Image (cartoon, rainbow, N blue to C red; front, top):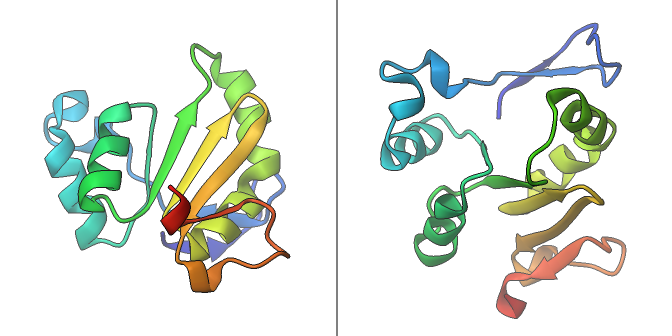
Length: 130
């Protein structure tokens, strides 16, 4: 994930370089494998509601970094209200983990190497436990 300091309109102080599937040549018809290849090539986090990415991540570790949005149907305004206050913590978790799930209750669970997991990180689930 690429980022740079800016005057973020959302108050988190960090802007993240993101590519929406609509910006890709075939937009929302882009194959999951193409999205995964792009994420791997450019060291990006895939942010998705699609459980197919979870299966691929758990079985093949592709994509390498995944943020699963598990909120069900939600208005964009509600999703922003849920995501933005948690964004700095989610970014911090993704620095040491490869999987984060965002639910209506907040974010939870991270799949990380056992060596990165400590008692000071209550969100941490060692990969061996998954």
